Length: 198
Image (tube, rainbow, N blue to C red; front, side, top):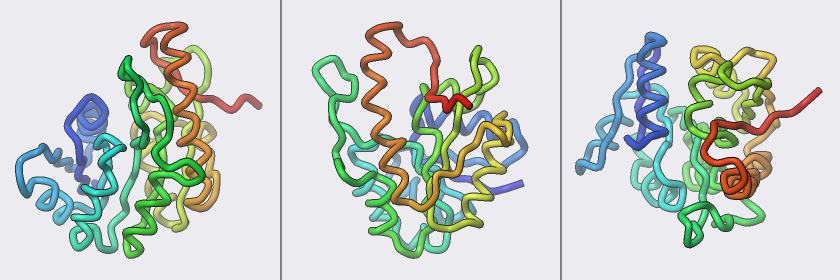
């Protein structure tokens, strides 16, 4: 059992918290109550960033002390939304939210994953008709192994998980968010994920 804090109680955070609790982990979800994020992060071994990506960097930098030596799993995408509320462009072109977080929090082990799919797929990958791919990016090999185990607890088979390398590689899966609005406009909010076919 791992003690996990989920920052963000929207669809993504709530979905992950429910599934991780079901898998036997001790999960705390931090809402917007003042101090809730700090209290949850302080008590956790792993912290999941499921806050809206546009404000994630500012929020998490305020938790520098609480995130010291922790694994920070970043599942968010930092984008500016268009008039229809769908992602229009990246906030950190030529970089990524994960890289910005790692630079700002050098004593925290940041791992990027689960950001290339609609949120229901994060915890139910086997429901898709084709095999999805979950990507891992991060500088700390042990942190990535720990996150890989969490993904397995969420229903991801080991062969569906692809380690892309260091944190700089996170800019590739983060840029994949630019597919999302076009796919949604074409097919609606049917669950889907990016997949590497071999």
